[in-house]
Image (cartoon, rainbow, N blue to C red; front, side):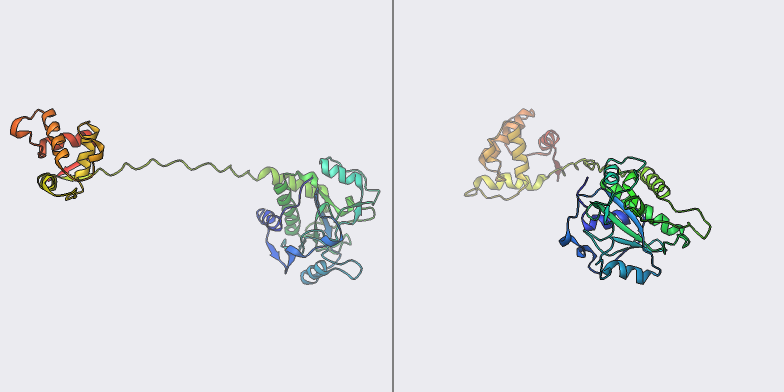
Length: 321
């Protein structure tokens, strides 16, 4: 038991099995839903049209008769193996059939019981395909058409998670019906039977590999952040200019990289890591120079190449001239 597929999923399930699909007019909303239930669905039913000619057969299955209004199925399968979608929802294709057969389809039991009653609404429970064939037992079924029947049915079964036992013929549902019937390929060829179609559906369902579950993409390794660059000449100019300037102007933005390194060394309060190489930064840098072994005039708080290189190695920035 399952809720019917959406019209789009129904179409896509058939196309995914490699079947050519033609969408006819307003097929998505052309139905008999006002006349009764549509769903839950149990299986797929195969019919023959008792007509010839694609254009005539498709038009007839879409519009129906005065005594049996269309659509008369969901899709018409022509002799070339193309599926013409003519309606979606409840359609007049199955009529009343045997409740024991319905129970067997629902349970996917094989073989099916004999259809000797006609008291259960099949239009609500089955997807239906009409296949263009005179139904006289002599009109041949081209192999392309038989393959399309199996593939269309397999696509719907796959979408619902059903097995091949969910596919039946009209003759297995309603007493007195004979469809589908006729030779395969040419007159005198092997007879088309539902067992043959179900065997092919089972093969398609088994042979087609299940698409792998999508896996989360491997997280790419983050690129290392570009190392900041500090110009020694610009830093020295800032160290000489900024302490005497009023306020906290930033004369060289690269000074902030050095201040952050000094703060990480515990030599400068982080609130002064603002790019202004002021008195507090000069004092902190003097302490760094002293830590590096300098004293007296050599530890004046004005950066030199050796002490700045030493700080850069510890805090991952690059020193340029």
